[in-house]
Image (cartoon, rainbow over all chains, first blue to last red; front, side, top):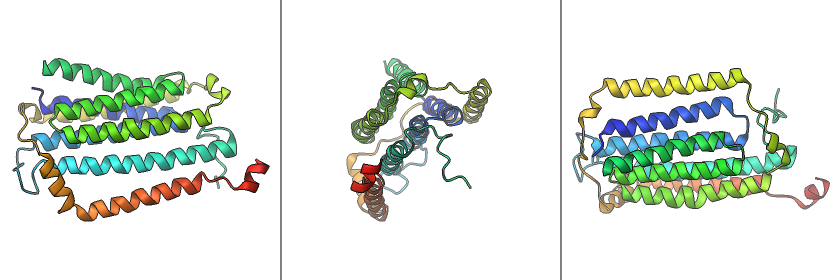
Length: 109
Length: 169
């Protein structure tokens, strides 16, 4: 069986890739991809730590069901966020015929 | 055997993430993202959380990935075919930042004694999760329902096309 650190290392890699995407990409959809990857890295950590928590006792608030419950909420939130971002992308495309975030500066002061 | 599955899923997850960001065609990027999310779901299975894994597949691959694919089809232009590659300085700083964060997190893990834990302590049953959601976290569930409803209304309002606005566009 794999140890906890294996999963946390995979999560760290995902998070690093997400940050790389956020820094380098200018396409709004790629930025959404990067954010989704980072959210998934965080979710993976939640599940990993909850399954290995040494203080977890079944049936109490500290049981590892808490970590899974948090991730369920987190996934639902991420889905809502993705829906709004995609709507913004569609609107930006309709207004500018482009989804390059460095071109979308009409709100610049 | 579990090690082999873990390694394969790690490759799928990380490789899918790289494809999502680096594929030339953004459609392939969306598919790579779906692959990465599927890999994470498989890791959830390995961690003994099948309910969350199935939820992840349903919501992410079933809904979000399909939504992204439809958006890509709606906003695709020829312009993306010659998507301007980022300046090499931007790319270098991106790689360095990502590596720095990943290495810092990895070092923190290695320095701790987390690797001593080699087996699952206990796994929550569906009953545990259901009980938690409907008792301790019931208010959170209510708020989340409102957030979802608000986001749907917001997305619909954003993407609504007025008749006269459409004619001028």
